[in-house]
Image (tube, rainbow, N blue to C red; front, side, top):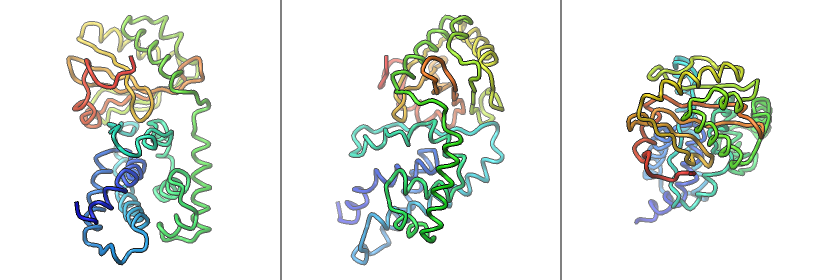
Length: 299
């Protein structure tokens, strides 16, 4: 491996982690890294004082351009937009970082509240630990402007954060109960799971059946899943708990096809929020590397 390639590969996990957190889809992150690699290949590394700073700067700016285009496209997206789960490579040297809270699917969805510029500043400063001065230089803004962006981003995220935060084991326990309730089609079991003010969010992208707006209230969510459970009883269904983005999620296959990935937020006793990803285009990458009978299951 030539020195330029070795340097790029050394920093690749960090660059991918940044691009994925910026864009919310692995494919877009890979495209950004490809473009960054082409620019790196054209750059004389001997002229650089800090290769990491150069690579992070280029990756950030490429991701910003792509995110601005994506935000325009998402205005015409059918229903809510949710991030695409990352198929984790546990051999990455920064695997621990990749499982950090900032990679959680709920957190990635929360980042959608930010403008592209706020998102970049927040991630560089708060997640990747670059100083305000370093972040400002990467974004070509003043240090004061950088501080303002980070401050606004933290405020927006604080307003939208889940009311409760609990360990993955609590989420796993409730997901297991949710799976059992679906398999038994028990309305009573479902009712016992959801908080009265729970919220349901589904992403079908116009390509799979899904609620087009957030569904508020435990009773309404229970009615929805009672219908789904009854419909599934006549089909070949497999529910499997699995780690995704460092958190437990429930994967559902119908006749061998992955049709839903669900993850939850909890108040510690009940499900306070549930996200349901059903867009087959977003599930395709995950379906290709998992199956109902194998994989990194939780149970």
